[in-house]
Length: 321
Image 1 (cartoon, rainbow, N blue to C red):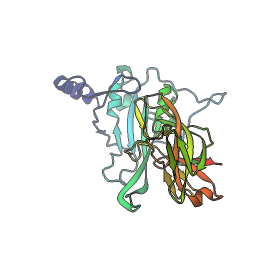
Image 2 (image 1 turned 45 degrees about the vertical axis):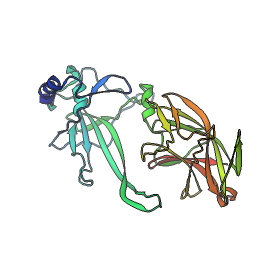
Image 3 (image 1 turned 90 degrees about the vertical axis):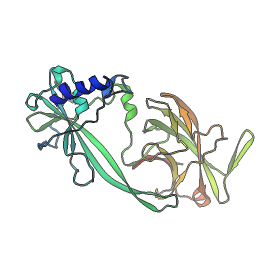
Image 4 (image 1 turned 135 degrees about the vertical axis):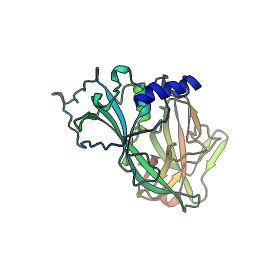
């Protein structure tokens, strides 16, 4: 790593320019290294899985002394043999190390005070489907990463520690759902940089908007919901775009009690309160409506209905009274 920092990178920057390996952060607007260079570690790293952190008398986690300490950042993949073309089991996070000031950068492993370890976890999901409902050969892979801090040389996890609310903008990158859960009306949900809040919903056969009358197809009725959306991301974005990217754009649908059947939004470009394909700047909010066409037997039945907000395997349900 020392050779990379002091020899390889300066040589490349001298030939191609100082910005050849750098990008600009959306959070801080500062430049950072993005070389994508992989420095594989051949040695095994045995780390204790159970946290051994201590708390203060007030129940708050004890702060870790970082002043003057040196850290090695590592990416750990424990499932390399399960997935083809998987990253190596252990490697340095080179771009993070390149950003460290001299007083925090260990030239050798023996100089390190801490290991900052990102551990990946992968789980196989369902198969993607064609428009006719048949399964494709492409399967969804759900991934998550834990961030742990270890005391170097002790092989003991000293503390899982990160200020997720500082800066406040970091919150916009966190999804507030894990798995499947029920959400109360008027409770906001954040997914993929969008804060989505369902306020109410009603079932109607038709409704008017200025000169237009919207009528559900034969054998169907509309679920008409009122929402507030806020762009919590760092860039201008489109809510419920016409071209949808799986795993990147959140979905809003109506579902039945067993969560087996899902009904998509009706995209009515002529309906002025419609939130489909709404473009908002960072921090901008908009109140509006979404509506969904469902069969009469669901609309007239006694079984409860839900508005589902989802991204991949993360899904929250607003119960409709």
